[in-house]
Image (cartoon, rainbow over all chains, first blue to last red; front, side, top):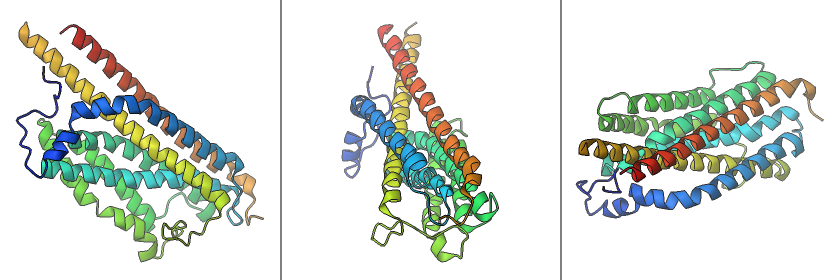
Amino acid sequence: MNENVLAPSALPAGRTGSWLHKYANPGRFLRLAQPVLPWLAAFSILLTVTGIVWGYYFAPADWEQGDAARIMYVHVPAAWVAMAGYAALAVASFFSIIWRHPLADLAAEEIGPVGAGFTFVCLVSGALWGKPMWGAYWVWDARLTSVLVLFFLYLGHIALIRAFDNPQHGHRAAAILALVGAVNLPIIVFSVQWWNTLHQGNTISISGGSKIYVTMLYPLLIASLGFYLTFITLVIARMSAAIMERKTRNLLLAAADRL
Amino acid sequence: MSLFNTSQFEPFINGSYGISVIFLLGISILTFTRYRRAIARLRVAETSK
């Protein structure tokens, strides 16, 4: 039985994509992922628990918002992971469309539900932050609305990828949706600059000029790193499980054929 | 000093942390269970080959 059940040798690997096929081989992915997963899981738990506990119990209250600002330590990491997850989904879809690599399809299939979950957490925690600060759980503000669109894009991708009898058609259609939907990412990021939003502007800037004190920044960064690692761990574990499930199905089918 | 009476925020803070922890725990348990089951089924399929 061919071990690489997801990347059959018949797959045309052009000169451009040959190195991708070499390093994105599902069998090789599984061999690399399995020893790494326990470490990833351990660091994910450590950083996420540290960040959340630090934010909930030990970080100082905000001078203006008081303890309500503690919601930031779950809301902001969830929002960042939701956007990064969709960017990863778009990249996987790009690889899927250009090189038709099955591992990219698999990645896109497994990123969708995890990313949708983080987006849901972002929306709910944001609503629970909005009520005491703005007096409303929801307003049709540019930032909130664009994140809601992101959630619907995730749901659409999850539905579309499973909507066809031929899985390849589903992957192709979902990949196109993911790529078109990527236009929403800069809209989310810049919405607070382009429009006069109720949602506050960017507090943290990579290029400097962050408006947050270090006693609040450190737990936020640790929680964010924990959420990112959790996302990566979950996606790798789900991809590994999917590869093993398909391998099992192929083995069982081969055994049934021999009967 | 906050502009608000911060004790009134507790349900919102607890709700936010609650939904986050429930999601993280839930999806982690589901993924771990699926991963372990996939390993076990593959092992059975390979031994009965």
